[in-house]
Image (spheres, helix red, strand yellow):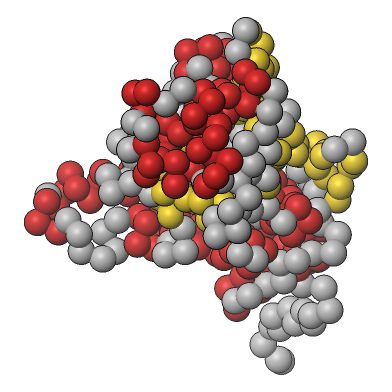
Amino acid sequence: MTAARCSDEDFIALWNRVNSVAAVAKVLDLNPRAVQLRRRNLERKYGIRLAATDKRSPDVKVTIPGDGVRTTMDIENGVIVVASDCHYWPGVISTAHRAFVKMIGRLRPQVIIMNGDVFDGAGISRHDPIGWQSVPNVKQELEAAQERLTEIERAAKGAKLHWTWGNHDLRFNTRLAAQIGSAWEGVHGFNLKDHFPLWNFSTSVMVNGVLMIKHRWHNGVHALWNNVMKSGVSMCTGHLHALGTRSYTDYNGTRYAIDTGTLAQPTGEQFTYMEDSPANHRSGFAVLTIRDGRLMPPEICEVISEDEGLVFFRGEIINVNEESKMPTKSAKQEKLMQAVAHNKAFAKKVGIPQSVGKEMTKGKSHSPSKGKSK
């Protein structure tokens, strides 16, 4: 039975014998993604479920190509949490980030995807600095991103960790390639991903052949509409910072477009270039549930008060400053949080609510510097 002569009945019969995308792909000599797509189409066409009951098959099967472009994931049932546009800044822990860590612990997702622009690269941007603006250097930004992702890793508890390249992330590799040339290609440390060894990287992630997750495609106010219309699948993107979802239904069923917003504070120092203009930016992230291989209506966790540490998710207002899971880990972080907790002006300057500083230093003594004795 070759792929060209495989009828719907033959495909269904073969599936019920092997219960595995990989096995069917081998038998029919097809790409696993093509098998998954036909599986889903047949389920919709006949109103049946082609379950993956082979116990040797993991709940989440991840295939990362050699070229690092499109990763494929096969997920029968589970949760994927997707955040993007963190633009992590030294000394700043946003409410959205704290909510992300908290919800990972609550939801226990199978997959965590950072959908681009985790790293900002303000100091290596091709754009000129704005006036005498002071920005962190690469080392400072890397350390900030590593601290925040370590918090996510601790909460992940076995979840698959994936990072799709964003345009800001690529500043790191692009600047080095432009300045030092190809002679240093492959040397450890000269690629951004070398600094985040627990994360797998690719340009995009295709889930079950029906959900594409990548940093960006279309721009503008009609971006979500264009993404879902022109791709033919559900699509989850970042880049625009405009947290939200949109649905589109036709003869083939319903597809979803998701904008994962930003994990940063929309008014943070990273966005000084906005010149204090109103921006359609919102902090938060997306929660994507897969049931029987199908994407359920996407859910959004949105920050409703940065200063108070409040987010809204599934009809509940949640204070992510309560029961902090992120106590200070280093002397540098401890010093910063103590200053935030005890100095209102300083807290406002660095953009961290005093409540966050107090929560992260709870139970720790504060010894203000003393002047010289007379």
